Amino acid sequence: MDDDVRWGLLAPPWLRRVPADLAAVVVLTLLTVAAVFLPVVRETPLRVVLGLPFVLFVPGYALVAALFPERGAEPIEDDETDEVDSSGITGLERVALSFGVSIAVVPLVGLVLNFTPFGIRLVPIVVSLTALVLALTAVATRRRLALSADERFSVPWREWIRAGKTELLEPETRTDGALNVLLVVSLVLAVSSVGYAVAVPKQGESFTEFYLLTENDEGELVADGYPTEFVAGQSQSLVVGVGNQEHRQQAYTVVVELHDVEVENNSTRVLDRERLRTFDLQIEHNETWQQPHSVAPETTGERLRLTYMLYQGSPPATPTTENAYRELHLWVNVTAQ
Image 1 (cartoon, rainbow, N blue to C red):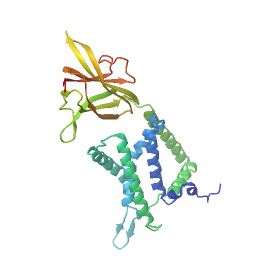
Image 2 (image 1 turned 90 degrees about the horizontal axis):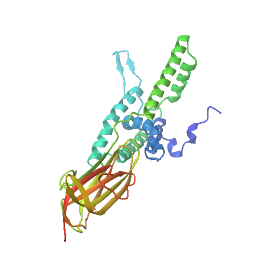
Image 3 (image 1 turned 120 degrees about the horizontal axis):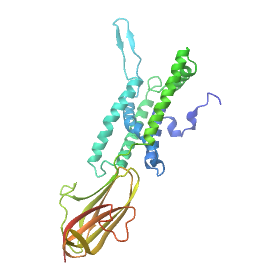
Image 4 (image 1 turned 180 degrees about the vertical axis):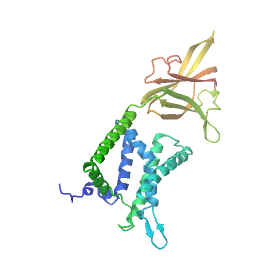
């Protein structure tokens, strides 16, 4: 095929005007979003392979590109003053700043989300970072295209590829050739090691978090102030939470029942039960599910047990605290209206 063919013409029209490095940022961002949310892809190591560079490099690069659209000027020596004049930032400085800025920006996004109803969870973080990167990329593209071709920054990737081919395939000496072979072997081993570590990660302890919360006067969720006095037919609010640390996607069922129990000789026997709520849910690894709900019991009595039973998968026909995977309960009194 002719070398003069412009492969950029195969790109969508809106992407053709975007500089190559910023277009790569957009593509990597979209691929990361797909790897995080697509049902099949998110279970593969591709999620980590794309996610790490996205978090550690892309937000910082987009911000640096928006702040510095011009190319870094080459050092100019002044013969009269023996001084070196340099303006802008070079490609190496741009890369170094991108890592540093990303390490600063990503925690700030998490800090802002912590003070919102969304919280620090996977979906809000990915959506926020994606929106931030795309907005910064748009600003960087606009500012860079406003400059002349000689002033704007561009990645000389063609020159890099040409120089790399010459260095690898046409070494000047046998020593250079041997060093090139050693370099390629080292890179292959390094990539293989990283790929193995990503594909077969060392799993820590597997467990599931199960908890109850209430909302205080300031609107914050706290593990305190649980309701203990109910009136039959009148509801009170609670928040049940499940955190998946099982290192895989997990199906759960939460069964909420009110038990009239009898305690004798350190054993508890259920005399009567009332089913209040049932929640069926699917949770990804390292994600948390929280559900505000109302509890309105009809059974009356003193020292009744409001019981939350968590099951992996479907519950048995008769849920009990003994066959539940996790169990929580509150002792409550329910009076008639």
